[in-house]
Length: 155
Image (cartoon, rainbow, N blue to C red; front, side):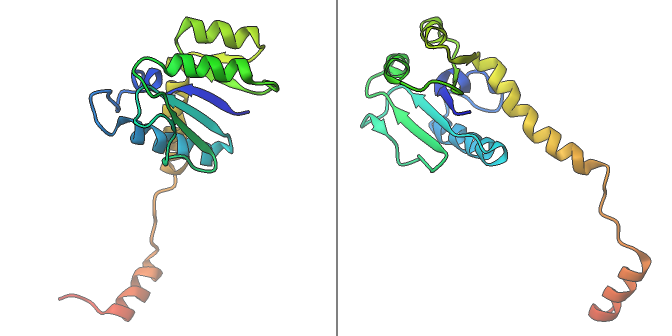
């Protein structure tokens, strides 16, 4: 199921990202790349005000990065994309903009608010870390002896 994401909407919902950071878009794309790698999902993320507008060089095989050429036009770009889609089955639109949400619902697309998707993004990493927290690295006394024989003892 691919995701169509309002990038700046999502950045506002992530505690470790800020719209005032000049690298906020690249940082979000990195987060989305990790999400796509872990889940096998594809993402199209749309940002306001990129010069030149259009597809960004930050795009990858799983993440398509688009910039609207003028400030405040990301929603319009998302609306046009939603309207032009023929096969909307499986798509999830991530936005908190009511116009985008309504347009997606009219095309029978699933909708997820930016805050909800941000929570999902944040939950993925802690779960993976938690799986390994109960398995601390343990070195047996025999392994210590082998390493000491190989590298010698410091006295």
